[in-house]
Structures are given as C-alpha cells and as structure tokens.
Length: 474
Image (tube, rainbow, N blue to C red):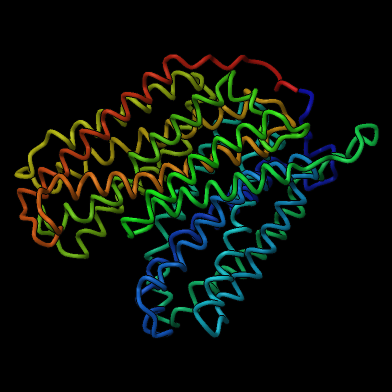
C-alpha cells in the first residue's frame, strides 16, 4: 500500500470502493445539477419577484462566484483538517441552503441562499475528486475519474430538462426543493461509505491557514469573473485590471508566507502547471459550443426550440457515455497517450466546424460536436488523473480545487471571449440583424479560433512530463 493512502478496510466503513465512488459521484452529480438547474427558472423568477433580468441573473452569478472564489480555500482546508469532514459539511450546507432557496420570500434572500449553496458546492467539487485517491487503487484511478466526469456531464445535461419539468409540475421552488432529499441522501452515503480522516500528527503542531492569501485569491477571482460577465463597457476593463494586480500581489504574498494557500513551487514542476493551462484552454473551447451553438442552430440553420434542444443535448450525452470508457483507457494505456488522443479529437472536431458549410445541415454541426465532446471526455479523465497522481498526498484537496477552478475560469472566459468573437465576426451591430450566411461565417471563425486553442493545448500535452508509475509521492 502506498504511503499517504487510507483504505476503506482500515477505517471501519462499509468496505467496498464502489460504495465510496458512488458517494463521490453523487456529490459530483449534485454540484453539476446545481449549476444548470436554476437557469431554466430565471423567467419565472423575474415574474414571481417582479424584477428585471439584470437582477434575476444574479441567482446564477452568485452561485458561480461562490464556487469560483472559495473552491481553492476549501480544498486547502480539506488537506489541513480532513477531506471527509469538510465534504460532509459542504453537503449539509448544500442541502440546507437548497431548502432556504425554495422558501426564499424575496429575491435578495434567494440570491444569498444561492451563494451559500455555491459554497457547499465548492466543497463537493474540490473534495470529491481529491478523495478518489484515498478510496480507489492507483491502477483504477482513471476509471473512477471517468465516472465522476460522466456524472458531472449528466448533471449538466439533466439540469435544464429536469428543472423545466419540475417548474411545470410544481412551480419554481421545486427546482431547489428537489435537491434537499438528494443532498441528505448524499450526506448519509458519504458518512457510511468514505474512510474516516486520518488523525493529525500532534508533533506537527496546529496547522496554519493562509488568511491573507485566501482573501487576495478570492478578491482576484471575483474581480476576474465579474469582468468577464459585466455588460458595462467602462466597468469590465477596470475589474480586469484589478484582477491582474490582485494576481501579482497574490503570487508575491504566497512566495513569502510560511504556510501558503498554494505552494508556488508546485506550479514550477510536474504536470500541475501544464494541466491547469490545458484545462483552461479546453474549457474555453467547450463553452463556445454552449454559447455559439444555439445562435447558429436557430439563425444559421433555422431550427426551432425543440430541434435546438435535441441538437445541443448531443454534446453532454456523448460526454456522459464516453466518461467511464475514457477513464478505463487511461488505466490501460496511460494518461499521456489518452490526453494527446483527446486533444487531437477536440482539435479535429473544431476544425470540422470551422470548415464544413452550412448547406450540409444539422449533421455538419452535430457530428463534429460529438467528436469534440468525446475528445473532451478523454482529456478530462487523463488530465485529472495525471495531475492528481503527480502531487504530494497532503496537497490533493487544494490541487483538485485548482483543477476545478481552472475549468470554471475557462467556462467564464469562453462565455465572454468566444461569445464576443462570434458577435464581432457577424459584422453587424446586433445578432438579431445578422442573416443566416453571416451567422454561419461567424460560427466558422469562432471555431477556427477554438481549433487554434486546441492545438496550443496539444503542444502543451506533448511537452508535459510523464507521470511516474508507482506509489503516490508524499
């Protein structure tokens, strides 16, 4: 048994890795549903609270901001005080805040409750992936990572359709209320299935937490996320400048404190730095399919809402189906080979979208999208496995959090940058004024850029150091 790994049989839990992986998978599923299920309720919330869209959209933004700003700090706390303990706290907070969302008497209360729900989700995202290394043998880590990726994709795809059905049957509170029993079920399963946290070494003294770094990172990430989502022309550059300055100050502080939130030295070696950069690039590309896709399918191909929904569901469906086989492929042929294969598929799919003419119809969009999302599933399983196997055991929580953070930053960046590129490429002032040919041309230009980003990630993957086989480093 490798040092730094705690097995189920040693902790008195129910004793089978599959139950532990089920508990972690349920956390991944719920956090993904929490991101996507509220979007479909925004029109009803605007009507229920008599509020403009600019205010109602904070129901979504508050959740994402909480996840983005807190996830690294929570990952670090999990490393210090116990990942199982903090995961249970996150699940409990997620369940309680879901109930508060359903009972919210006003929009400000709902927004505050969604921020709390996002804080719980940050713990679920960061620690579920980190704990895979504690409950699954090293040679099966890829398969477990693939399963978590599949469940995350299922949750993202299920959220809007599931939420729509719940709203139609019982009103908007139902989209939040349904997560209460699911969350409590995850609490119960986690409590009995996951190994207890190992006792802290008394000789090591009281662990120290980097409050200054936590504040600086949170403020920097909040400024960046708001700069990407703000619609005010004068505000976005200022917030982006604050984010750049905050990042510089954060790095300076982290290089000097005794117990940093993030060990800067880890970024200079191994797979971590390249893995984070690739994650940002790939997530930016995938967000383009969600931002640009609906406009192209509607304005470029003339599809109706039902057909658009079916076409858009192909991506998450392929990712969900490919997740587990992708993880098993990682276990069989290695993370490096699988990562490169996934990025080749991602680049090929983006190139096809940039080259195939709109005259070929919806198949010319759906088939390249399937290629892209299968490549995405391969890359995610391989990259997550490689990064987490290449860091010391006492940094698994913060490293897992950084992986999730890089993904979120890529999604935020993709929504803003790729959406802007698409809008500018139409050559008209508003998308409503663009004709089918202009929209098709803009889509091709956007995915030509996406293919370039995929090629950059592919170069990084080929140059990334291989992960050494054997026990986890401590």
